Length: 402
Image 1 (cartoon, rainbow, N blue to C red):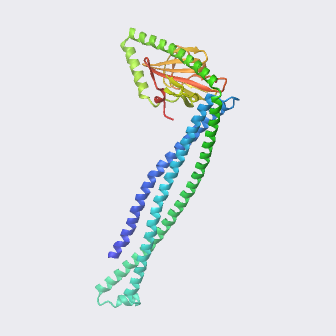
Image 2: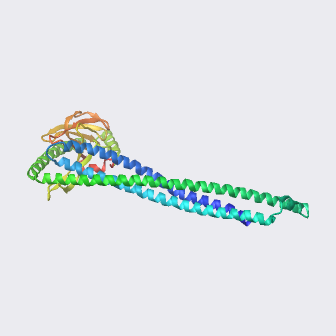
Image 3: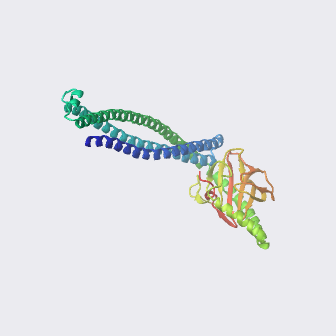
């Protein structure tokens, strides 16, 4: 009876181990699937930035916009390589987990075969070569006859079950070995992919080095462009500040309960969407909010109250939230701007070739408000700001993370 217990316990132990390791692997498969999805998103982002880069690189002279696009392209490339490394790491773990299963299965097969051999030998020894019928009818009583018959039947069934168990475990073992081979092949593909992406990264960094050398020789022009851009943004800031002050003064002079409730509801809805707003244009942040170093001019610090979003040619800017258009105007060397009010909050879209909306008009989230200007050097960039009352906010914190 003890041996029969061993025959039962061994498969139970094997199944428990298989389920435990499979559970770990299943959790990883889910993470790996998510990782593959994220990797595809990064590949799509690379394609998007590549289009923007090509539009700026087609010009005879290297530009700051080209450098911004190259820097973003390199960041996206590094992100992609990190994703591939993570996939390789997950595969290593899965291969290791599967090896544990294989080792356990190999051990179980050996034990099962050994026990089966012992059972066959024990059966032969017990009968001592005597015919089974002779063994049965040599019983001294019917009770002993029945006991011998029952014992022989149980032993025969146990041997059959043991043989079936050996076949099942051996078959599972072959399946798991095939899984390991499949994962090894998948890993080889990923490692080759990583090698190619690393080569692309080196090439991009070499390209950036050449652009930097070219821009260094254009220092005088870059400084002049910087001053022109500063003057344009300062002009925009003065116009927006005056409009917002007038809006606040108007709201304070007639604070009806109905208007206060409406503005409060809109403001609350706007706040709830922080970090969830869709981007006003597809692209990447070429100019960050706050203080940062100039991309090409050493020792030059830039301080921005908004962000620049570099995008593709003919791109159309969209309102990030429903609101009232409070102003549409023009700033020399920058283009048209649109100011939209959302309760206590305001959004500014500047650098438009032509506005699609007018002051006093209501707009919905995602509505087109104007095509973005493409400068002569091939750079297409939207200047985007978010205000709360008279205070500037960092727009990057309000847009969905990319």
